[in-house]
Image 1 (spheres, rainbow, N blue to C red):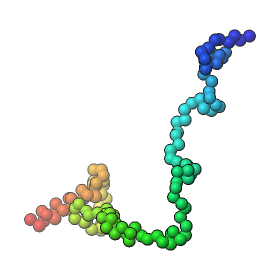
Image 2: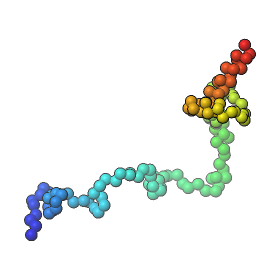
Image 3: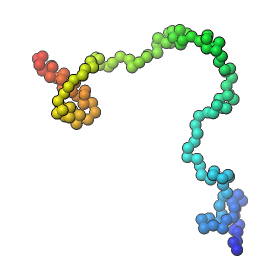
Image 4: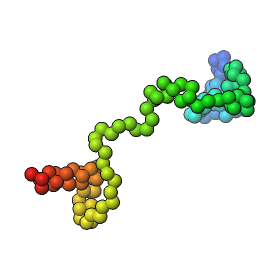
Length: 128
């Protein structure tokens, strides 16, 4: 026969090896905190707070491009990467000996820029 211990309120007496008094889980499977918390809102949440009516085909037919509605703002927004910091380089296909490629690649990232730098130095020496 198992004798039950007297435990504090909210605690249940148990006859187990791990603990004589143990707090009961609120519901099955909820005894451990959930490591992954859901983020964001559900469609129900968004519908509950939305006071904007659903757009109709007529609404879409009346729509105009952003640049037409706000030309000044559209012009002020920079598209693309913007101007280069250095003069633009030309894209070429060049065959190099394996020894040259291995030498520059062995020096790590930026090896193509180092080849460019070496060639520019050679051109300056030749021009002098």
